[in-house]
Amino acid sequence: MKRSIALFFIIIALSGCSNTADIVKQETVEAAESVHTSAVVSEFTQTQATVIETEPEPEPKLFCDFEAECVTNSDYDEFIDAAEEYLIENEFQGAVLLAYNDEIILASGYGYADENTGRKCKAYDTFEIGSISKQMTAAAVLQLAEQGKLGLDDTIDEYFPDYKYGSMTTIRHLLQMRSGMVDFINNPALYFPEDYLEEYMAAADTGDDSEEVLEREFLLEYLNYPSLHNVPGDGFNYSNTNYYLLGLIMEQVTGESFQEYMSREIFGRCDMLTANNDFRNTTARGYYDDDTSLSMSLSTSLGCGSVNASVYDLYQWGTHLFAGDVISKRSLREMLSAIDNYGLGMRTDGDIYFHRGNTDVFNGFIAFYPDGFVTIALTNCTMREVNAGNIASELHVFFEDICKQP
Image (cartoon, rainbow, N blue to C red; front, side):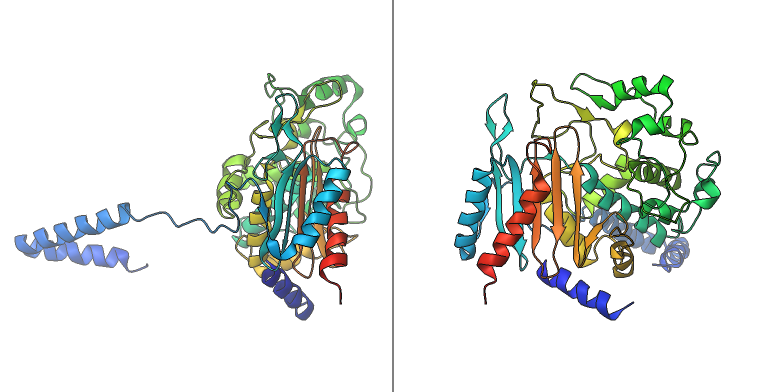
């Protein structure tokens, strides 16, 4: 991935068969002239159809072994020893993947995938990745823009005609977190009226035996209720509401469910073999101190935090993204161009591109560095217990200190 990412940084710095019907028609005419020719054409057509029917599916373009419990690169033994000592001392629980120069240095699990059953965590375990999902939603929207199915500067009154600020708010504002909308997840008391708040809170975080009790459009019913933080376009305000609406726009534009589109055009295109958008479909399980375990259903996390994935899935995602396999290089430049340190579904810190994710009992972090270093950390612990972002950032510091000494 180093070459893909490093080359892309250089690009940023420098840039600111139509005849099928005729053939069939011709064969039909010739067949009418001769029974013998008809038989030959028929035989040829059947043979050709058989070849098409049996044409194999393209092989996945994999950059990791999804069945590997642990991966270590012996060229980095000193760094790996220091990294694992740090992870164990800080009681990290979850999975980590570190890569450099197109190679995985370390991929491993730590602690328990499920404390109640005693099952140990492996590198291939899947977790709720929370807001890291926003990178993928943004890429999906950019795909639709490339296809001419929507424009980033289209106003959203086309999709939500009853929204009173719709004619002032663009799809780009949603992507950049500049719509001014209140965050319905992190500030529900500001978003929903008091008489609905209790019902929302009861349905937002659910357990194993729960069913999705909120309709997809529940958010739209109260979209006009809260005041804006700022005039659309005039300021940054991180809000999950933006990306929930992007998920709904995708469904309107494509005519299919958000899950179907993402499974084919993001997970499928990136060969993310274990990623999904299904409720509680993770191999890792997280718990609160009282032994309860809650998750956000798709009906409350659409577009903004619904993806489940492993560190291998996220490595596939990043590698394909920076290689130009998901969106064009032009769209990728736009995705990474930030205002107030936020691009389109991507946070920035100078030339570092990253995102955090946090759900009830999971949190995660992914970062792409300009030299090609990649850090991914996913944990089935609350952020209060284990902060995946802090862990991942510290591991990069270790790498700089140990592996890049003059």
